[in-house]
Length: 192
Image (cartoon, rainbow, N blue to C red; front, top):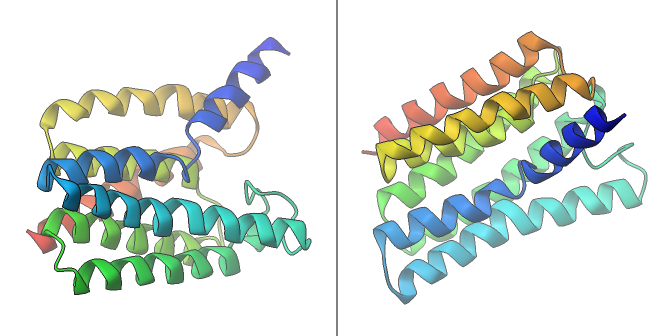
């Protein structure tokens, strides 16, 4: 029982909706250490964290999904596509503000990873928790400082937690991490 409590705590701390807060703050102030960086971070937090959380809460409240964790593979597509729409709004705002390429790259990465995750969810379940940590860490490694690679170590307890909670199988955990790292890396290269 204690093991499941620890696993649940790790899973909650690493919610894919919380990770962008850290990512947008770090990247925004790395590229614009001024009030401009604050605005970039705020826009990212609103469209990549808050708006998706509100959307999922509304879907849960009106019983369109069975749980906010989107555990049911068949319920994932519509919420993920809707979240991609929110990310696109954020990207368009960044584009019009002429945000630096790292801001555009991380936003495009969220769009791409979530879009691919949505389509994969039509026939298989991958760990978007793992994707939601692995992609942002990859962005930090290639856009801010290679020392952020140490944060990949957090994938080990997170993968363990998702497995212990019976949310994912080992292949779903590995592929969730891997596809997010790869797509994020490719998007960053495309924008650089």
